[in-house]
Amino acid sequence: MACDFAKGMTSRLAGREVPSWEDKETTLADLKACIARTIDYVKSIKDSEIDGSEDRDINLTIGGQPLKLKGQAYLVHMALPNFYFHVTAAYAILRHAGVEIGKRDFMGAV
Image (cartoon, rainbow, N blue to C red; front, side, top):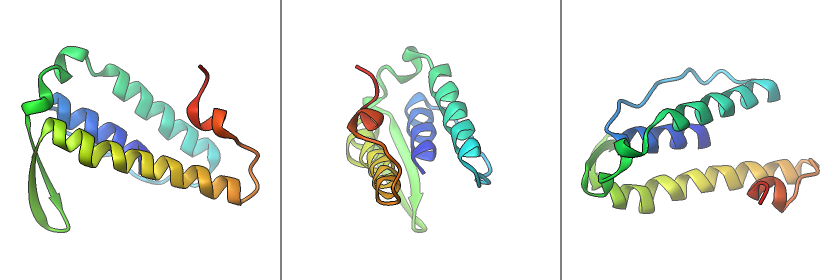
C-alpha cells in the first residue's frame, strides 16, 4: 500500500495516469523489488511535472463515491498521511514479529 500511495500521489500531482501493477508479492525479495520499482518510477517524474500542482484538480473515487480535491489538499490531507500510515504499520508489525529494526531503519541515513 505504501508503494501504491507513492506512485499514485506522484502520478496524480504530475497529471499522469497512475500505473497499475499487479500485487503479487509473496516474499521479502518480491517486496524489495516492488519498492525499487516504485522508487525508480517516482524518480522518473520531473520536478516541472509537479510544480504548480497545488491547484491541480485531483479526482478520485473512494468507496464508490467521487471525490475532488486540489493538489495541495490531496497531498497534505490524504496522500502523505496514508503513505506514512502504511509505512509505520509495516514497521510496527515487523518489530512486533521480532525483526530487529530501529528508528534509523525507518528514517534512513542522515
